[in-house]
Image 1: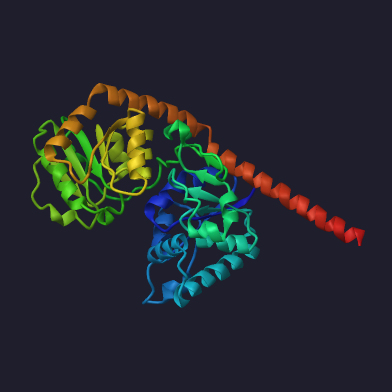
Image 2 (image 1 turned 180 degrees about the horizontal axis):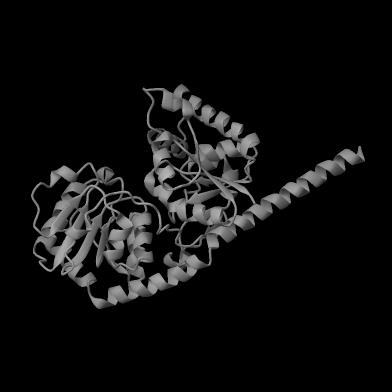
Length: 394
């Protein structure tokens, strides 16, 4: 079997999007390793997945930035064409040395590299390592970005979309771009969730509303005000109970809430969404996919990035409703909640879940990765035969 190395942007949402694929590949006999920084080593241990630390020297430097800060800066610099200063040039060189040192030890057959870590892709290309891109959204980098202008060959690298084609818009396959493969829902419903919650606090006589703005809610402009709007909206829905997942940044900002509202920094979100009658979300792709695979109707209040288009897809497929996170009033939010609780949304959500479960059972992600591995191996054999033939002819 093959050895596969996964390099993701160091953020929980990006890592979680790959867990299903990593576990499935391992079950089929492949060796799978993650390249990660120290911030997520404990998390990967909890998931019982193999990892290799990237940026060991950064860990030893007390003045060093987090790997998330570093990768975020590198991504922005590559997209905008900014030259790297001495510090970041040294960081990239360190990554190159560490990855190069893996080759004789692991003999990797394929790298799966997040679109959001282009420097790792450039290192792999420089070292002659076979790789394809992983995309945690439907959005590819625009063709006129600096990194593609200076390295146009990257535009031809196959791109694996960690999502089902069935959720995309029918007309979304655009010509003239790199080869794109949809891998299916790619949601690990069995991932370990260690966030504590006292399930006895849920009232079984009330309909459950779960509101979460993802793992980086503090970065969303207007998030605190939005949380307050949802609290006010649910306060008059006496037959409902709200679990408001704020993240650690906002958890102490709502000391007084109605009796039917529970504010938590984190919860076991998969279990909570499965129990929910309604999921209120910002439209982050992981949360959207989890809601789809668990058959929960949604109300999407997008803030930025790919979220408006994710919200549009939810509306297009009739799986929920959308609203404006900045201008929504408690009365408007309450109306949306009451509308989405109507039977039709639940029926469509459950039907779509059945469709996605069939897609997931086909293990498209594993089959596509294995097809790429076979192609890589074939090219290596041809190259080897060509080299031997040239030597014999001499």
